[in-house]
Image 1 (tube, one colour):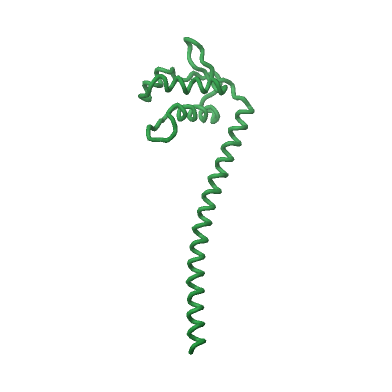
Image 2 (tube, one colour):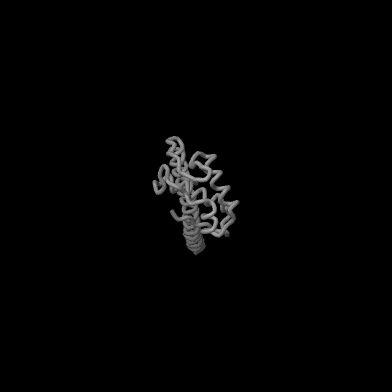
Length: 135
């Protein structure tokens, strides 16, 4: 598993770590009883504070994704079916919202283009009508 973090992202680093580990669990890349990198090793690899990796692992444990075994490491817990279902619904919802935003922006752009063309067309008709009416 490869974790990539960005200091420039608006998302805190511990949240980025959590999200990537959750995605790896839901995708099957990480399975039940897999050992995660140690807190210190992950901090060294990512060049971040041990406090940050500790926060990510503790949050994952509180949410039921992993278990921290003192002196042994952090292990992936079995998938909770309800949690997996909720994650799938969240992804569908996110995709739907993104598509709606894309469609609504496309519709606005399209409507603006149609309005411009219609105004030009109506403008020409008015001009031609005035010319024929006066002439």
